[in-house]
Image 1 (cartoon, one colour):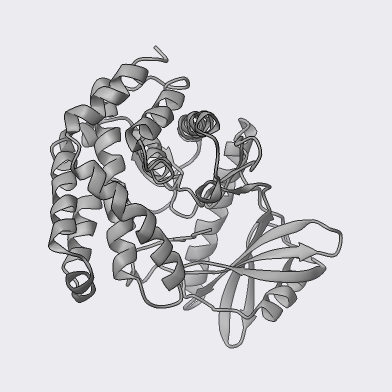
Image 2: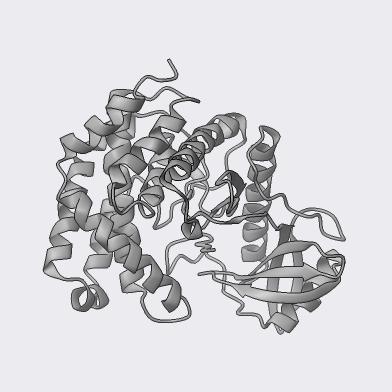
Length: 365
């Protein structure tokens, strides 16, 4: 799974990636949570060392460790991690299959320890069943059903978090819904983007950004609240046989945002698995979300435009990051995303919103 973890590159509040070896992960999990680890396997992550832990009792866990620069930074990260764990617990209380944290031996959800002259913060949580939605290969009927279930879960998430306390900090990061155009244009200005992104693809991105910017006032005026903010196809787990949603993981991007962003982000990644008809996939997600919560016509328009721009952000960011320890993940992301960006850029915005409006607007009224 992809874990973006916290922040924009260069943000001093971001954790320090510890790059732990698997044998070190097993020893740390034993010391912080008393786990008897039979084996560990590495998972991707921009800012953290993430691993699957397979225990001697036959169960599994998710391991995450981040590094802190000093004692103040460690406390800042601890508060952030504890808050994210509380979001998962709140989501689980309303039936969303969120991965719950496992308490540390000393209490709390976050263990802090000194390791190789650095301070580590460790969180261990449930290992959720299923496969990433990105790897799901369903029949067309099952695909539509799964996408509607994802839409319901996205809307249920914002409902569940509506009464949850906010973070102590104003959380902004490069994946923030409202600032996607600025982030994309900043990335497009890098040397890496200039050499790797064609003028044709740049034109596609600008066309989709312009549509979203035309709805800027709608986005700002829309209801805001806490959101998971990363319903992507690796953070959503499904049963490979039935397509039912089995897990929602990685609350690391959670923040106060327009509620529509939760559905828009979910719809964006649902389109990646629907090359033949991405607008139908988008419509399925919004249709499911509308069973839980009513969305105005303006919000539905912004959901469509925002989903397209989220894919632009995904394509551009991972093209710029196509080297380094996440190179293989980035290459897979680009391969799936750019074709949909091009297709959406060639689709009139009216066509997209008509598809969504025809099936979902006002369904929950």
